[in-house]
Length: 51
Image (cartoon, rainbow, N blue to C red):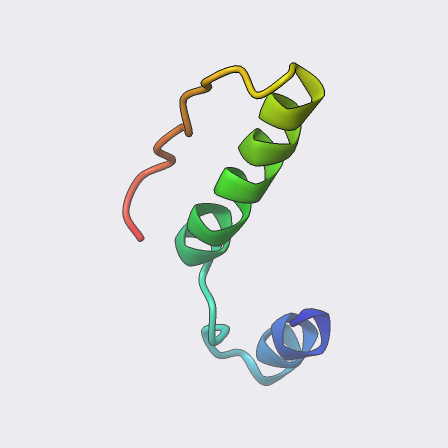
């Protein structure tokens, strides 16, 4: 994914995964980890906008 992102910058095109898609894929995992560290506490996954 990093290579794809850098390649998109070098070639002046949109990356295969945009920032909104990336955060939509990443946030649930981060929140799940935080929840696990707190004994499985229910936590809200933030909505960062259009995906």
